[in-house]
Length: 101
Image (cartoon, rainbow, N blue to C red):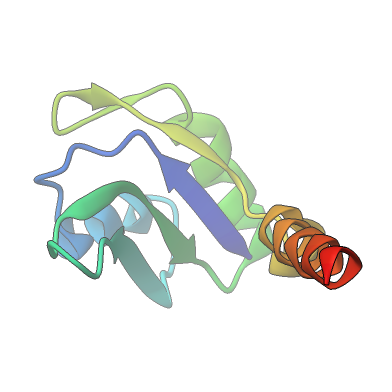
């Protein structure tokens, strides 16, 4: 199961994130998302756990808990195709451009 983790401390590292989730079972990966321009954490990341029951236990236990001095938000990640905000904006801009010219 892919798990979304938000409100991370900007100093939290992937190893620390993985360690927090390993209390509940096996972790395939822990990834913190970084800004590509200034190489600083964006304050959120993803954890992949192969066992759904262990993942749900981790979500329940870690949501609204403290990690590195911050209260984090932990929930099941939504598939990327459900988040069409960026695509909609681009399509809308293209359509407006084509209508004007």
